[in-house]
Image 1 (cartoon, rainbow, N blue to C red):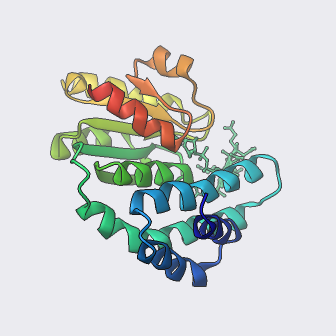
Image 2 (cartoon, protein in one colour; image 1 turned 60 degrees about the vertical axis):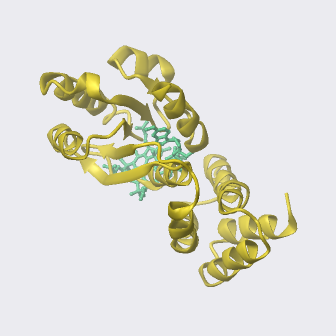
Length: 211
Ligand code: B1M
């Protein structure tokens, strides 16, 4: 990894809000592609945050600060990624299911899809099945992503898939599920089309489903 991308990853891990935008701009000015700045700088840093969190070496306030730092960097990158040559892959509709307020991982998934050329519609947290069904009607996404971080909210994914079925929309959209407690086995059980364990592989899985 180049020195500046490593520096960017470190700034993200440390949640240095005042430095991240200048450094992101500096990396772009050096001619590094925006996709590479995202993937090998920011998301590489976010990966470390996720691991440290899991190991108990980082705590919630620090993770939230890193997420905020990511958002600041995306203010610079998002417009550039949006106008880059990347072919539009269609609409990716994304939501955290009802009863669940976790969105750090979901927002990382959103960023990865934006970077990969999808038009992302991020419904947010605590989304009822019927609200998601309505959004599928309104936005006509090629892929619907459902995120859940709690074992108690995972069943809401199944409820959403059933609601799509009842609304006659199930065949119009590929449904992907993810989140720390979700597994491939669970995805199969509830009739999802795909599962991904992390943000980067979620994009690969969506592309695979759309082939
Ligand atoms: Co909550 N929480 N939390 N929490 N929280 C967990 C999930 C928990 C495992 C902690 C623990 O007990 N060890 C536990 C769940 C236990 C369980 O159900 N088995 C838990 C609990 C119990 C709770 C509360 C009930 C606590 C309480 O109030 N008593 C409460 C519930 C609130 C609610 O949702 N109704 C609660 C609240 C919160 C905060 C609000 C404080 C905060 C969330 C802030 C926010 O998101 N804005 C929070 C946090 C931060 C966590 C932990 C510490 C970190 C989650 C996180 O952001 N990880 C978490 C423990 C842990 O994971 N170590 C925990 C980093 C993030 C990058 O990873 O979200 O896994 P992750 O996303 C990954 C992948 O999962 C995947 O890609 C992402 C990036 O690679 N992915 C997808 C995610 N969605 C995907 C969708 C896809 C594909 C991949 O396709 C569509």
